[in-house]
Image 1 (tube, rainbow, N blue to C red):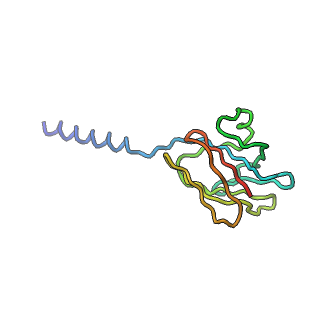
Image 2 (image 1 turned 135 degrees about the vertical axis):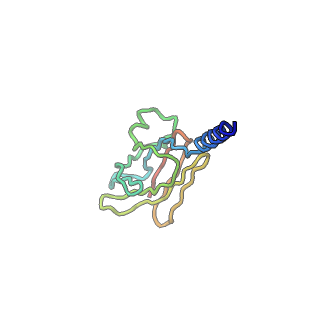
Amino acid sequence: MKYLINVGILASIIISFSSCKKENTEHVFYFYTSTDTANTELNLYIDGNYKGILKNTSFTPDCSSPDSILSSLIIDQFPYGKYKIEARDESGEVKASSTIKFKKNSMSSSGNGDNGGLSILGTDNCIIVDIFE
């Protein structure tokens, strides 16, 4: 009988710990720039990894924009966390730099104020990020 009680307690503990594991859901981010890119292109780097050339749109996209618009932006997926975002010109000079902190029910960004920035719009499933000089 004592054995069955111990097994029951152990099973309860294992179930409790397994329900506490960290959520690893990936969330969709769409990146673009509102900066005029006629004379220079801006390259997106996230945590030092090149992601592509930022597209300038003639309007501000949002999560209800047509798929044809959203699919033309840089799209990536990330779990909750902290990410360093940079836009660099063709010579590698940083034109915008910021950090995004993204967790359940909360998003924030911070920068050093020396160059450019970003704005974030969206929900858990669709996050639009404008990176500007």
